[in-house]
Length: 86
Image (cartoon, rainbow, N blue to C red; front, side, top):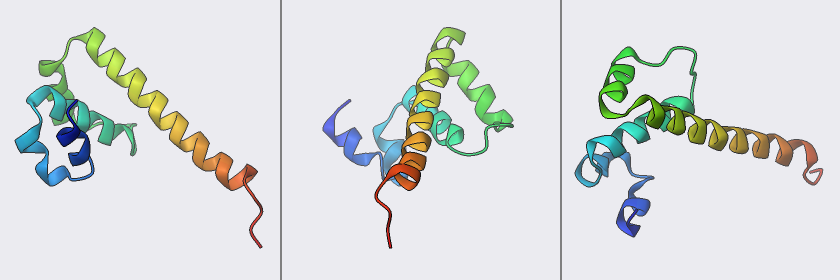
């Protein structure tokens, strides 16, 4: 991924001009997986099924899930195991 794309990750308003459809789909899935995942938007699901194979979707789900686990575990560890603030 180019430096330009990496720099743009925190500016969703620029994504459409920098990323292709598959990259946009992966970003949308990552965003959706960071919130409530019990019911992904059916439109997103249909779009992702058109863009990716089942194997690719499985890989995206596992990578996204691992990233979310790391972030959430890290946040809890900082709060529970970090220095006690007074």
